[in-house]
Length: 141
Image (cartoon, rainbow, N blue to C red; front, side, top):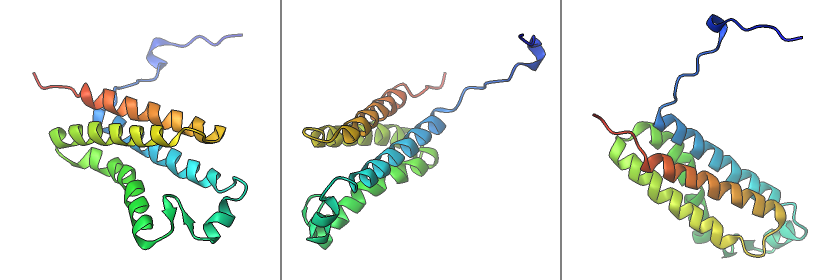
């Protein structure tokens, strides 16, 4: 049995501003990075290698951990910066950083486990959508 829906009862679905879409995409991308790294800890031997001083980019050092920390903090900051910066710089930041992160992820994919390939594919897709939305940023009349 279907219940008829009156036209006046339909839900409004106003368009979202580009900035809000970009911010939400960066939040999604950040979660994918975090969960991908978290699930990576379950790979056999991963924790043992960490205890032995192996870091994400070679031997663990203050410099290597600072580099990785800065690499991972940028997408999280883009959640805010996409909403707060003026349109022109935020547009170019979105394009440049999304291309950089998608390329970085693609470089790390060969030989990875399936879960990582799945996360990486989604991350690259999210980056492509960020570039597409920022490239098509609405213009004033």
